Amino acid sequence: MSRPGTVGPPQAAAERLLFLMIALQERENRALTDALHDGPMQDITGILLSLASLRRGLPEDTAERIAQIETRLRDTTATLHRPPPPFRPGNSPRQMLELGLTQRVEGVLVERLYISLDIDSSPPVLGEVAVLLATVQLLLQESDPIHQAARALVAIRSSPEGVNLALRVAYAATATQPYAPDLTARASPTSGTPAPAGADGPGPANDAAADEGTPEDIIPRDSAASWLERLRPVAELLGAQLRADSATGAWSAMVRLPRRSARPR
Amino acid sequence: MLAARVLSDGGWSVATAGDIAGALALRPLEFDAVIIDTRLGPERGTELFDQLRAQDPLVSRRCLVLTGAVADPRPDDVAVLLKPFRADDLLDAVNGLAGRRPTENGPRDGVRPGRAG
Image (cartoon, rainbow over the protein chains, first blue to last red):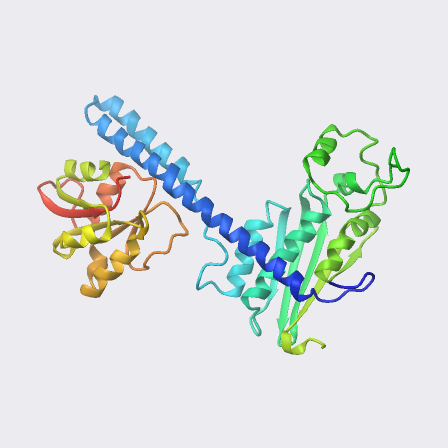
């Protein structure tokens, strides 16, 4: 872990946690796929075949209506198929990153995602891909646990010396204030001290407070400063260097992953 | 075995098995079409396909793989039918394997190892 006030690449333990986070997502995805296949997809196929058997004994016009229902049921259910996971055997690093970012970032953490990958000359290895993907997810999640950012750009460039990640994030003009009920400067009723930044998170209690939306729960503050304050602890853990644009409320993060042989001892 | 019934109604003579050993005992290479579910309980339908292809490299032309997951690993050169499917989808796919038009009738041989569905 980086020392307070310094920024450097994530240490081995942090990298391992990031890798495990991605591995867990893959495992969860596999379990959901299995459950979908072994349950609803099997059952609905059985229903479709039963409907076909049933309509054979019906008058032509009624049978036609049943056939239309079969088609509609099949097409509707087909939309529930989960997409192929990013880390399938045989996928290139580019495919892993593009699939991972489009499946787990776009539409989940940000409304519109722009991706720029310059990684063909020295492509990242599996562990680096996992760290990059996890870093983007964690920074976006920590920046606002409730709302999606409006736009984000993920730029990744790799070289023999290391892999560089640049993340730039902008929120909609109407929602440039970060969600931060845990960052309010409201005095504690018992101690009289401000609530510590990042001490709590998007738990049920905080979600409930956000839903209530009472003015005393969310205190507007300077947008850029709020982003930095909220993100700093996680950014330090990830070795991310933060910048904020006070004019737009946008923020950016840069992470460098030195290749093992190029890391300082 | 709803799928077997659909195929029988479509004019096929059908034999079924619930696992790889049972399917191999049916001598599937002698059939006009082989329908394989990717998931046969604890076994993988792709394992059956690999064994068949080891015996007959051209068997893929007569195989249809059923799967409920886009992400399921499957051979590249085999016809795939994604669940859920309609009875007509299954019949058309099997008829297509055998070069038989949907309107044709008459008993043919086919085998569908795996669970009904």
